[in-house]
Length: 348
Ligand SMILES: O=c1ccc(O)c[nH]1
Image 1 (spheres, rainbow, N blue to C red):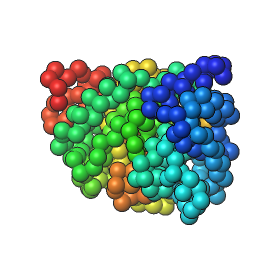
Image 2 (cartoon, protein in one colour):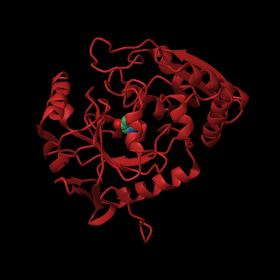
Image 3 (cartoon, rainbow, N blue to C red):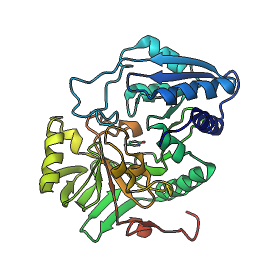
Image 4 (cartoon, helix red, strand yellow):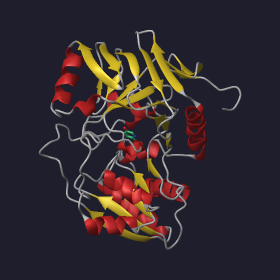
């Protein structure tokens, strides 16, 4: 469903206001060939209406010779900012960067954030952005999940399909994604609605059984058969099953990088307005699949880099896997049961 410019300007105004944009703030809008024209057009209007000093920085696409997917989250690592002193200077001098091209997880992104610049990623199509407009309630809900993660020493994930995964945690920070950037140096992604951390380096262990209907991203596919993963010392050491497993193995083999098999972020979705089934209604190149990452009650884990959290892994291969019907327990206390979020009685 198309979105009117008026609605999209209102959406941007809402998100920029939640992001505490003030008159005279310097805003730089990062664009590339894949930037959605309406998202860009309306971002410039909304930021200008709020009195910001607005720049545009258009960067050429990179990695075409390596990536096997057009999804902007599929191939990470070097970005058009790598070695680009002029662009880095402009972004570090900005109060707010609206990333309409995807810098996710890049070393350059970390450097820009360390300067106090806020970065908001927004590359889903306008109708997804408008439908999943962030709210202060989203921030509160994500914050509750984050508080539980911060207090925990171990996450254990089980399922009737046979998953039994032990994840000692505490070594890495907890990341909250609620869709706006209201503090200096904060990165966020509009749309979202989930919180996660990373397992202590080398400590994840157990078995993951991906069941029918679980989702692979960037494949944007719902599994039609089970995939079994063996996890030892923080890495997936075996991926077995039928055609779905073969396709995943073949894709990951292309990176020829053992770090691609590391367990990366682990957490759960809290966005009640996102749905598991939405991905099936979009062409796979139209969307990143943020409904799949954010739907309330999923167990979302990923494979690959952990440099976003200060870890050493910068592999270009990044796979996100939202699972249904899992039970997530923190130090023995269930926070999600069979894919449903449990209200926590006493605050964490
Ligand atoms: O918003 C995102 C998107 C992908 C990812 O792996 C984490 N957060």
